Image (cartoon, rainbow, N blue to C red):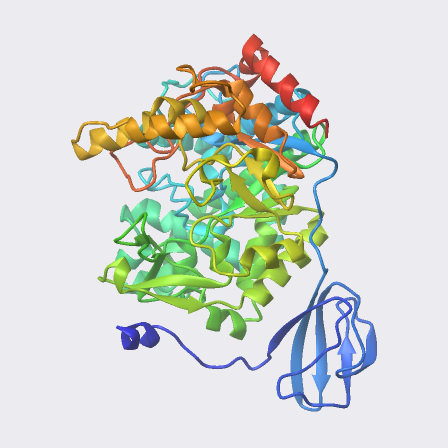
Length: 588
């Protein structure tokens, strides 16, 4: 099996080595050559550099020449920016939001309104679900963590009201019907595109010129899939799998209006995110915290336009462990570390820049993957996989460079099987870990008081993958698992866990029947973390969670809506009392 894994990798070394250091460190080249090299800083300044002695303090990507050998030197700050003050924020799924106009799911415009409302209630940050590009021609693929590309945006969330084209009233059920809802939304977006005047056309043209061929390739992919009506690019006829092929060029010429439409949608989505962050920063110290998925669908736009960037012949996942004895195969691909080195890490740099373009923070999903990935050969089980070492030092240095330039905080999801030393390394770099209530327990499985949690991580009551506080207390997740498996629900263990949590909350006596939600929120807010983030579901006291890991259709993942518009929800007396508690504990 190891031979099959190695056969998937191109180990050719890069022509121009990419090195990374922390500002203030001396430069040591591979093989430890000595002497003086010629250093050209990113701003064009040329200076001599004594190898092994002189240091570089300027943050950025510089060029170093030693004889005939060229190197790129990435110089990172010692630490990422930190949260200002001691505030609190919310975590939301954008499509779940409502505003005062009935829509089938939330958009970037809905996000902008919600951010302002949350900010007025005291929040300093708003963590959002990933906005990576999905598959507009295939609305059945709506998981934000299995994108077509992380270099572009989810255009289904674009809102033409930004250009004076309000949405018509849409059906707004409690569960999103993605196929019908997205088809209706794209139909109206097409109308907005065809009605756009010269000013909008000029803005889109300028945007296309700025982002160049990669944007055009992405728009061509979406247009092709729209016409092919086939699940992914890897299933297309051979002549259409190469973006530079005559067949693709011919298609683009014959369907220029469709390509222009998807280019317009990327511009509109980008404008929507920019407007949402502007609204957030008018009311919040941090604003939006973007979410970076760990990988992409190999059959998506990135895999079609730049297949050499991605691992081939394998998918990524997680190894077997006591909680998942069969391991996990997530069915997505990731950036190839050897290809990254040959490309000067451009795909990763561009990915981070895209995520931070309109954000005050970045959450990195499965940050363990910066150091190593569990790769699984195609047609094999997760147990047949192996770890692939990633250039973690370089990747984390790039994140630090881009975060410093954006003035953004970094949250690294360090849950699950954490390699020794990872959390210490993240802390040293100023990358905040995540301390999530269900997982903060002692060696005997008892809950640890939030007052004892780490001070170098974000405190959270839950994530999109965990039960809500109310749902956990009532055993709703246990009931879901039992219903899916066809077995009766056993809540005996949950009762013991409730008593343990009640003890950690200093609740006297046995755990109450009703969830002590306010006490939980107040306890987590009182942790020493520099920032506390609460899922909106927990602020509202909702039972159901957005996603149930390990399910596809058995649970309505990524389909739930909020029960009312954000302003109305925040005005509810119980919710207003909770935001008051959080702001009193964490005034920002």
